[in-house]
Length: 492
Image (cartoon, rainbow, N blue to C red; front, side):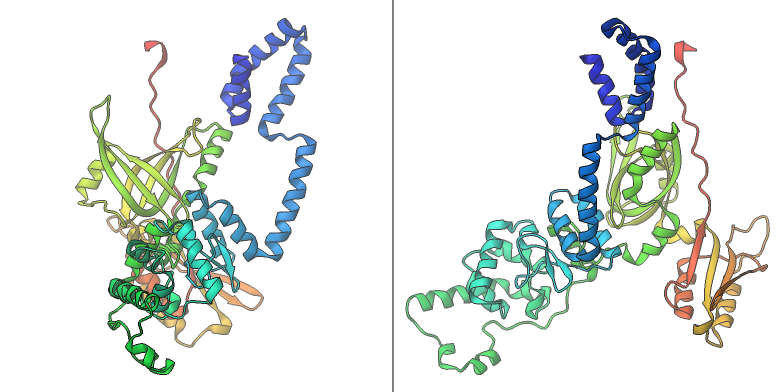
């Protein structure tokens, strides 16, 4: 039974090397246990081998086919409702949620922050968009969220922050109020998040006193005024202060919701990530491809925002090594830095702090025990240097129907300004290719001038001259991975 379980695990995990080791044992076992000759045993083994690739019973395949058709129909015809349901189903899986939220954005579906006037407990549909649920806010909880929703359903939408405090002040504490504010749940009430946090405590105190007076039958000055007059008199003065910085708003959303909802700090660099790097969400595919191809390692370029960097001491080597955690638009991973990479980091006076954006040259080693490969940093650079370091060809897109008289001249002047004269000592530049789209035809015109230095300044100026997404970058090919040294067998 133990041997059978080893074979079962090898089939389930698609471990080709373990399967090969088990073949002879299987054929021998067929003879001794069931008197099956080697020829028939080999035929049975070949069927098992095919099944190990990815096998289903026919009844199971038919059921999957029906479910696939149903979900495809729902996704095609009710995409917002379908994705809201999928997000709710994966609410406990933060990695999967990050991928799904990015998939929604690729589908043109907006993801909105939670709102006290429209959110449910979990993800819901709000005017063709997906709205975060109040129950998803850390520190709020489903019980408090349920009471807010019940008040809204019984007495109508909240008309102001004071109205919310008067109706729900006894159900939530000041900390929950802060979390709701920082997550964006009060954005629809007409105040900035900074303003709400500035007046939260006095507003809660005022609302509590109002409730106490009403309970005891006492009136107040506001009871003598008409509704219109009450609107002109503020119970607690609202200070005219600016909103928090965009990055601070995103940081609060990430802390309380687990995700960036209003945007992502790397969103402005999305085109650079797409041009130069492998998305972190596809590392599983990279590892599986190495297993299928029986390759030990591959070279990758990865990029992302630093979430943490710690230096540890190896138990055996007693040498320091770094553990770098990064995340991109829809994935995350940890990467190891050993002595050489740490020395390069020190020599370049580069420090790794949370929220820094970096691009990494990485060796990915096959990992038969996990879904993701083992990652080791070879080189590390600030992300803004990626165009200069890794651009081989720059394609400028020019559309005849949009062409202004001086567009080509401005682009030519920019290329001349950024040119790198050819010499042995000059840094490598990028070749410029102009793609001219004239109705039904696209003409590629290759420049024979000096290569150019492609940097973020040049790319920004191209967009100002030609418009958004009017260029494409072909990146430099990845180098082969360094040879992995392994200890010789038999002490040789």
